[in-house]
Length: 314
Image 1 (cartoon, rainbow, N blue to C red):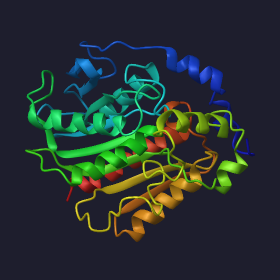
Image 2: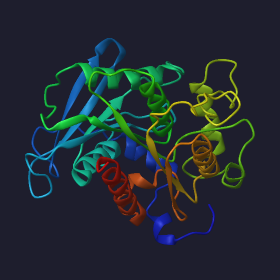
Image 3: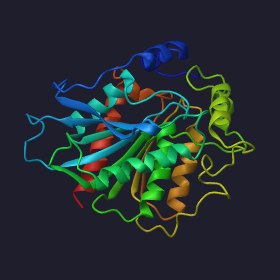
C-alpha cells in the first residue's frame, strides 16, 4: 500500500483477519446495548429476505417525543459475502442509530453467485415497499418514514444508489427518500482506473478480489461496463430528468483502489444536475468505517450527522 499515516494503517487488519472479524455474528438485543435495542424482522422467508431493526432508546441523546428519521442500510461484501448479523455491521448500525438519533433498518439481501444481478436490487427495493405498507412490530411510533435516508458501503453503496433510482420512480404511501449516503461504493468500468492499477495488490480489496466478485455478481456474458457497475457510462440510466433524486453524500478513501470511480460518480451526479457532497480521507483504505479506532471513522459519522441535519432542516 502507499505511504500514509501509520496509525491509520496499523488499525486496519489484513484481508484474512478481516474475514475472521466478519465471520463473527451478533444476535439481536431486546435489552438496550449502547443505548440501542435491536430485533430481526422477516419480509419473505422463502427469499431469506429480512432486516435487523435498530432503535435508539429514549435518554440523554434522544428524547421520547423526538421524531426519528429512518436510515435503510445495505451492507457491503462484494454482493458475495456477509449479512446484517455480522458483528462489524451490527456494531456499525448500532452506532449509527445511537449517534445519529435515527431508526436504522439493515437489510439482508440474497448473495451471488447463487443469486446474480439484479436480485440484490430487487431485494433492496422490496424492503422499502415492505416498510411503507406494513405496521412493523418494534418500529417506534415516532419514526418518520417520510424522512428516509438510503445508505450503504461498498457493494451496499452501489445497491443504495440503484434502489434510490427505483424509489424515485415509485409512488409510496408514506415513505420518502430525502438523502443518499454512499460509502466507498462498489463501481467499475471496463478500463481500470489509475487508482485500481496503483493499488491492484491492496490487502483489503485487490484487483483479484474485485474481479472474482464481479464474475459472481454480473449476468453471464456481461462485462465491467454493465450499467449495474458503470453507473456513469454510456449504457447507464440517465437520471437528468429524475427531479426527485435525493441529495447524495459520497465518502472515499485515498488508499482505496476504487477512489477514482468515486470521483467519477460525483462528477456524473453534478453533471446530471444533482446535489452531491464528497468527503475524502487521504489516509484511509477500503472499509475504514468498520474500524472505530481509525479517527476518520468518527469524523465520517460527524459528516453524516451534518448532512442529515441540513436535509432534515429543509
